[in-house]
Amino acid sequence: MADAHAKPNHDYHIIDPSPWPFLGSVGALIAALGGVAWMQYLKGGSLHLFGMDFASARYFIFAIGLLVILYTMYGWWSDTIKEAHEGHHTRVVSLHLRYGMIMFIASEVMFFVAWFWAFFDASLFPNEVHQVTRAEFTGGVWPPKGIEVLDPFHLPLYNTIILLLSGTTVTWAHHALLHDDRKGLINGLVLTVGLGVLFSFVQIYEYMHAPFAFADSIYGATFFMATGFHGFHVFIGTIFLLVCLIRAMRGDFTSKQHFGFEAAAWYWHFVDVVWLFLFACIYVWASSGAPIAAGH
Image (cartoon, rainbow, N blue to C red):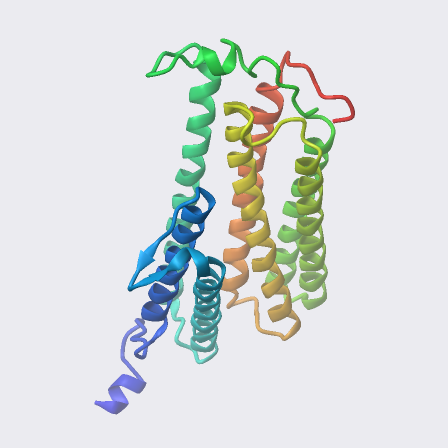
């Protein structure tokens, strides 16, 4: 039986018992408690559980949950890399890993569909009547009266060029890997990570100088939610690619086995495509005919 488990006569991988699902769930629960306590504190309330006020220790509780989650991610993915090096990622297992990544990206697509839905619902129907007439908040037009928008062909265009360039560099890195060009792989990843960091800095600068705020109007709310979550995904994708760069420098990837890098490249292309929709719809179309803030 032991020999059969060590050398199974099939392409599936029966993993060893793992603490990571349970530990990750515990970390998520702790972080959620800290987050709820934090929100209660911000509105002047409290969160009493087990005889203590969680709101007074909100930072500490949330930080513990976040650290547990990050440790789980590190440990779980380290185990996955170890399994790949040990030869457990057979043709069938690799296919299922790809299915998993495709399903994850599909869920991310629907996540952004929600923000686009909110944006178009507000922008296409500024006079719609609910419990309160929306025209009271928009003036019956979009962008709402009194809103000065960002120039779409200034910083947003720069960031569009940056992301499109990063899409080409990550593709270069991918083709280099397929041809066993380790130097090309590393150079392509260095450029992609650098462009990702540059995009984040440009967006932070844009937010710092935006002529409207999140709480000013429904325009600001939908703008910052859609573009802000995309910026967060760029940040996550940059870390993803940075880990791939470190692994590439260690010699982990081969032309035959490199799903970790492939998943990162898929994710980065997804981020690129979402930005093109954001740029076209929120920056260009939604700002058409609206006053552009001076210097923006």
